[in-house]
Length: 419
Image 1 (tube, rainbow, N blue to C red):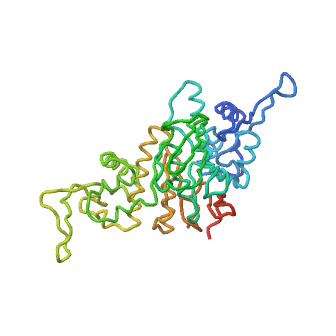
Image 2 (spheres, helix red, strand yellow):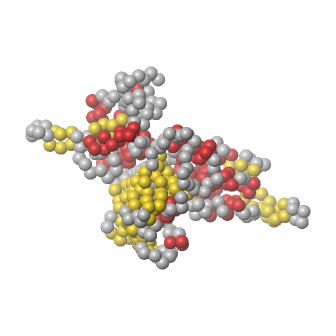
Image 3 (cartoon, rainbow, N blue to C red):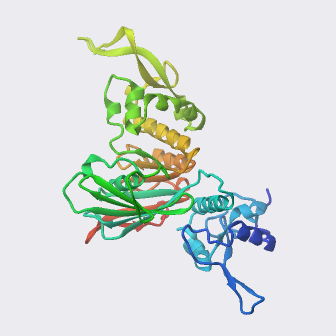
């Protein structure tokens, strides 16, 4: 690998700039940006090109988003560039690029190229993107509360509406609205912008538990599955603390799956899960009947049940795992399901992690693992959460939900230096 010093060799050549611009069809990479980057010049023979080729990883030593460990050749190639309008070209590098992390730009580039392939030849794509959710009216949030979603988004705060955002977002995407919203209150109005890969607007009204949806101005009875949702709720895991019963059935219930589909995810976990999760497997074992008078376990001689174990047939059973380990089990299956669905179409993985019993080390490991998933991720955490190290969270957009004068508000947070 070449030694990098200053910007020498890492800037884009004119031919590379042309490649980046033409692959983008001279369109700004920011989803939904309508600003043209080419137009009439001062004379009939001239063209005014106002766009710019932006580095994803910086050409400069101390530039925005760092250099990502890339060589000079990699930094200066078209794969490390996006095309942007003049305004977004400046914003992308403002404040050291904190609001536009590398993974976000790479995701936008992938989405843009998928849109262009669709327009060119109708090519099917698995690329999709949730751009934002706007809570236009509700009793929980300030009017027109807006959350812009990156490829990886962290939503933190006390219990001021994080779950509501997840519930409403999933309902607009076609999932069932939880029963807790069947309450007498004023209607809740939300709007979601999605790119699948073309731009779509989904407006949802939730009133007494009934969901009414409008897509691009047209009311619909049933939402087409434009983006698949994998939603691991805060209540997930409660069933895992009960002794007895079929482990695959209890885990499947948390994810809304059949037992057969859940068990089919195990090979993927053993290939692509965490190092810890790759030791998970199901086994058919004698059915647990309870305890005798002396507190010893009783098992059937004729009936079997499915048991999940960590570390082989003689390893630790699901019931003997700690609370944090049970959460890790659910997380492994949720990620495997998201990976499976992402192979077929756009997918968002939503995880309510506010009450996860993880220490800083395990939480940072979780962030690093989620950053490797081939889908969009929305993760909620508790108030005043801070990472132990920033590295696992590079590429994450960070927001805080807090109490405002007219309801909860959502604000973007910078990644501060770890103390």
